[in-house]
Image 1 (tube, helix red, strand yellow):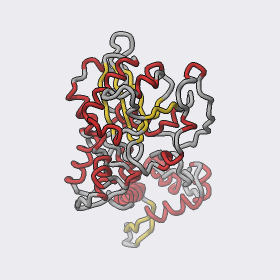
Image 2 (cartoon, rainbow, N blue to C red):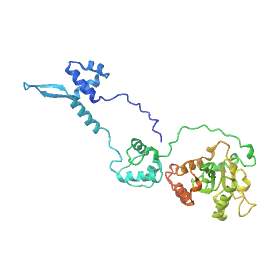
Image 3 (cartoon, helix red, strand yellow):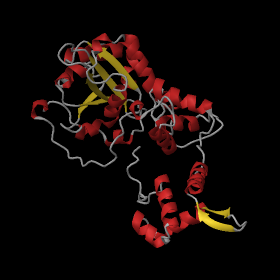
Length: 351
């Protein structure tokens, strides 16, 4: 969430400081009028008049009479007192339980502030106080939380709408089936079983280890598999393992898969071929247009989430299967705004 789009104008007014108050006291003793003092200090006349009224006290003279006189100490004391009293208190107040929950979710569980607040509301979690997403972002920006800073947050996305332009399918992949031929009903995301697939690379040069990432379009369910390299042979091997895991029901769960035009996906005939019956297609493969990652938007968003755990340059070869499984479980249990902060697992269970 960006805080840069505020419609409120920034005030150019600056409060008088302690030094200026002592200058006012001296200038008044010299017989200067508020208008003259305002010119000398570069302030508005009304600012000086209000300050004089605030810092004026009644003093007893030697003849037991009283006179009104401006005192800089009094003006400064009243200003400090007023500053400490103004404004509403923090909404989170002394709710240490809520603060601890937020810190755990953001730091340990790598949730975004919006996901934390959304989960609290969706699950009806009760705390002494409640705050909205924007307030939480403001608290983090101001350093209210002792253990959270903007470094702990996901990169804030640019909400400016991009202009997309379709590019015709690459000539080297004329044998593949273009996304233009994919049934329009798949766009509605109403039926389970239509996936997007991509490879997420790690450290270049020293290790060819790669992650195969599959994202189900209707539920955003994630399947992540580690591969020794980014080749079609490795992709086919992982899809074969996946088909064996699901057995003969594989085609019910995997009806179509949409990919980019990377070399690891180009031979659709081999990738579509079932391990149980080589004459049968286990799913239908569609190819997005080149340079059109938005046609696999769910998959691209999934990759960004994975990068919270596996930054660019990470040697994927060193990740264990348990590491990959934990990331997959995290993604499938991550509350998503598009589902009213329900998780992919909850969507699947409800369907």
